[in-house]
Image 1 (cartoon, rainbow, N blue to C red):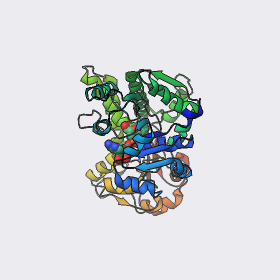
Image 2: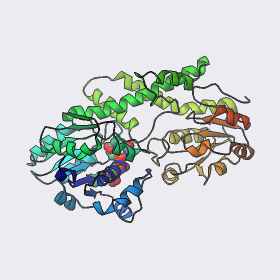
Image 3: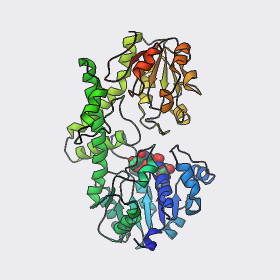
Image 4: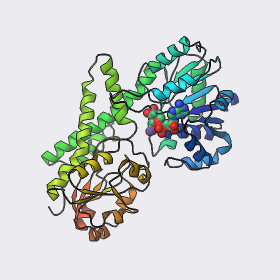
Length: 436
Ligand SMILES: NC(=O)c1ccc[n+]([C@@H]2O[C@H](COP(=O)([O-])OP(=O)(O)OC[C@H]3O[C@@H](n4cnc5c(N)ncnc54)[C@H](O)[C@@H]3O)[C@@H](O)[C@H]2O)c1
């Protein structure tokens, strides 16, 4: 690729998880990056070097490349310096389950007429959004604005690694300069490229997330049947995952998927299908299984403790998965609310998600360490697979707790080790161990 395109300045609109990682990743490749966000507090914090999200390596990468990354609440510098404007604003679910595109529309509305610029959509949007935005541009005399779909596949917790070595780069475009410029930008990464039309690129993203969510709900149902039949889902998943046609990823039984993407993207694809008159039955089941899975911990607790009124239950981990502080759609939110509704006192510890968790879970009693959170508890529920819970001194925990029950919502602990410390252990889809 040419030096010119290697150093093409870009803009990133929206400095959340995707926007900041995209900015850092391209700055590492040598691109000048002009970031824009409407949240003035967030921009001020980032400018002070105070990165508002927890993502391993992100702060260091932004710091190391700070001379190439500019932050502003104004669009003008971005439009002046860059022709490719990456859009990474949120597309949360609406009450109907459709994607809320108001932030995307606000970006589209803010664009001036131009023959020099292109919107590059990183935000996850319903199929047809690109065509609709192009129509809007044409109707408003901005037909010179180009449009590229470039969906994002990063995993929170490993987002920078995913930027640097993506499984694939998907570029959906109309075959003009903008699509080629995006292809050139990603070329140094050497990733397999899927260059396609805009609608197909949009669908690759939704279908990929829906497939992964389906895999999780599938293994969760297998786990539930394992519990009824005496099989161990960990053994079953290992045996299945070695089949190259199946693969071992996303074949981990647990208390259901959460996060900012799977729940909303599965629902958005289901609604998208429904809006065209097609009933996507499989995804309806995937969502139902996931909702029920989050609640299965309740029956496990009740089996051991009877009524939960007046009991103290400690949630170990609150983020929707380890290595992130993202609390969006975290299973812990449903679990804490169910426990409180059943009369239990809920205590909790998470090594990075506490600030957001405190905002979302007002009646939960937070502690500064896992051991403190377990003090006096009747039961521990492992919700997030943070490595420090595996390394915890469980014999110390046993001495501090008033009960000796662990429900392992991620099948993360070594059952024989905690049983040796005097605990009753129950995972998901595994035989319970230890004293009944
Ligand atoms: N988080 C992930 O793991 C992930 C992975 C792949 C794709 N995605 C998709 O990427 C998109 C962004 O996700 P996120 O998690 O980074 O969201 P986020 O909520 O962390 O960040 C969105 C940012 O956009 C800003 N914003 C909103 N409206 C704006 C506007 N008009 N102009 C400028 N900035 C504006 C917000 O202030 C916020 O900082 C979503 O569509 C999401 O589905 C997310």
